[in-house]
Length: 76
Image (cartoon, rainbow, N blue to C red):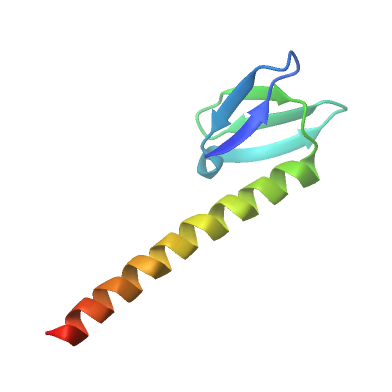
């Protein structure tokens, strides 16, 4: 999940896997696959960076988990 801010400054956590479309018209509007729309303070590039950082973090945890399982199997 990524942290974004609505126009009024309220923080929201958003599941980035549900983003269908990001538009800057001129405010940034996120449309989710559910049909929900969110107007946020962040610009497209900022949102993209947050998504990439989140996915890197998730991937790193997955790789660590797989390494731990392999190490455990090698001990047996």
